Image 1 (cartoon, one colour):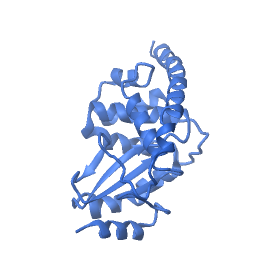
Image 2: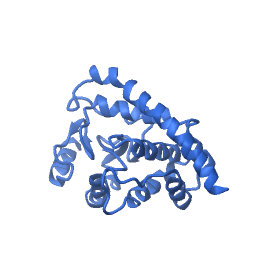
Image 3: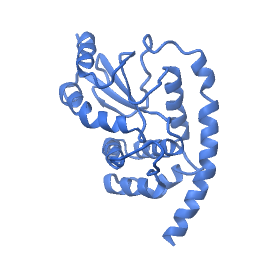
Image 4: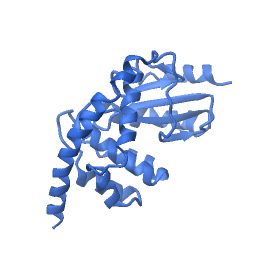
Length: 223
């Protein structure tokens, strides 16, 4: 019975994702054409998962893709230092925005993360970390691992969200598609070309792993 249910969900999801791709590819394009350069505009983080002091003078934004091996590496190497030095001390706010560079699995993971955030914001970051932890060590962009079953399993282990509601949000009944579309629009608006992309007070880092530059930009923006 469970297998049949998952098969139905997978079928519905395949149809839904076609529609999602069309929406995400076409809808934000006009916004991107008239957007200001990334180095002059702070990223709007309203409604985005955010840690630290929301009123901090420095805003750090990660544009990440759950299918991206470099994002996993950044989260395991740079992020812990950033959290200890600046997020936990209230010197910065840190926000995460979904990127959809790797197709249907990127979209599916983004829908899941937005569903978790909508249902239980406090559980988002644990789910977020667990989702990156679940990325295979040998991950290649074309290696499929993001599935409805895996996402609901991770959510069940790390959150108290309604799994049935999560499954709905991974289908054509999704209530979080608008938020995923908004994220995709921000990606286009700010000219994000690779993941992870890190922006500090509107300045895009050339090398997201350059912690010295991260420190310098944060200190420049800190009174």
